[in-house]
Image (tube, rainbow, N blue to C red; front, side, top):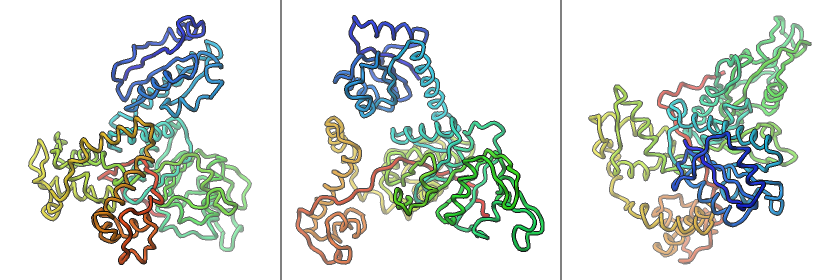
Length: 488
């Protein structure tokens, strides 16, 4: 990891000279021709210009974290810091006084350096494999929240996207003093009593048949959670709303008074929740307040939305399954097959396939297509993947150079795919869906055809534009040694 600095300022600028002096005690390198993704760059500017934005945009490619430093308040007074963030800067600092500037820059560089070291550590990489920029960007966010805060976290993702793996990693990275154990609870099997009041603890006589006192550790002893532990509520949407709110409120307030009692035992619990479906109704008067009070949300995408990471995840799983941890490498043809295959259950399906490949591979060395289980081989060679290499990359490069967002690129590609498939099939929605290996309902929803009519509908060869495209998310990998979720 290299820390470099670049000035885009007037040579006669006294403010720029002052910034140079203020940062002179820090170790800097000149900007490299091609920055490494783990680099941290400082770009000093005296006004937000096209040259500054181009430098930020070009320097931040590949995941480089850029701190943009204005030499004075006037540097951003016209348009603010937002264009710099849009161009790829991770943060923007404006110099007020030299001592304060040095402290701000030092604090950010120290934090980013620690995060980068953790992201590329074996602790994190062994849990969450992947090398794409989207994956690394998400890992940075997860690591920073885990290490430098005790914030509550909500993980959203389909089954098999690794929500429990991320939850355990957050607990392992958590730097709370005297941190206690991690407890996972499958809320789908939770059976509450008295609308969750038993979890709050009680004193004798509070309820009928409540003869023995029960205070518990912050009222959660029945779930095995201790005061400084981490509680992971898997599929938290299955808990009664009143109990969800009670748990979060008492974790936020760091105290718990048993029902009918007066004492206030303190606690330092961390709450991590997961759900397979994004909470609905947020912002409405009837919305469940619980969701809005969780500090940080992470969306964990299914494998189909980050296929480029699949070979890396597969290699990681194979190494863990191979005897003596032997070194292996996937044949490019096997990479292509793994990327093109469907994984309805996400990492669960990938792990099953990798176990079959591991059983057939005679290693060490390159894992070839001959290790693919026999019932999977019929899928080989069915699709020409050469289009993924150059033609598509050229088109995407042109889109990025033109300033298109990831969402716009995805929408345009999906729109074109649906339009072309329908033209090939004479407007037959069902056949177009089969050609694209999508559901008829999915194609119908993008053409304005009612799903019930899709099997017989024949539209035009130029269907309407895509109506809605799910927003592309970031990624997560599973763990072959996952422990079963603890049930209450």
